[in-house]
Image 1 (cartoon, rainbow, N blue to C red):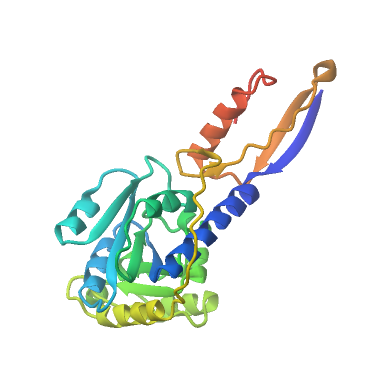
Image 2: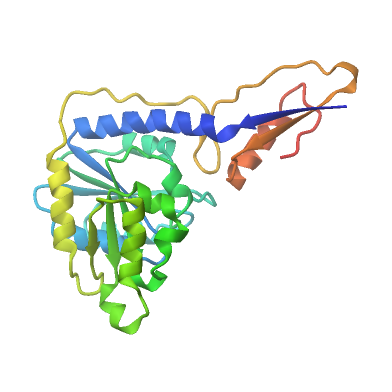
Length: 287
């Protein structure tokens, strides 16, 4: 006999994530820090983009949180340039999330008004789903990826506050259809500014920096007490899951089957399976 139930895991995860993200957003704004969530696929030039932006920042100190699955190569590179940079390694997880950033922000010293750049994991899917307390979502795309990316990864382009099209110096050597690319962008995000830049030559980055400084200048600085969140269990991708266990009695050998919908993170699944198996009333759980 089977008792089948459906559980929507993502709804609870995202609600808790967004709650923490809201506090990060308010905390940083209160200290005059604009938070920029930098997204983009691997190889689009996210770190190179930051380096070029830093050259044009005036009156705003750059802070960086580098997100990588492994290594701290970019962090060391930026530290060598004198940039206040901090590393988060996810060890397999495909995105940063608010609990990760909350923990890191608690350990950072924002001694000057500035801009916090959070370089997310190289991925156009999962990072777009999780708010991390940003005021600006900055998407880096590149002509070498092809002109179809807005059509294949619509959520990232739809949520972007700023789009950077990198490596435009290579357009003469590629079959990049800029009109097709922009048509896809505008269908998803009518008013988002799109800056054409070259990480190699530095072209276009002064305009990007000016746009960001203008946004940073509009932050309302006010007293705000940051609430640190320690509840919940951190999993491999940084999610803090609140485990709501439904205690039921197994009468007559009833086997309960829970269908967990919208769970697309393997690390989350493994952690949930382990926690469920630790429950005394559970003989075996497979996820």
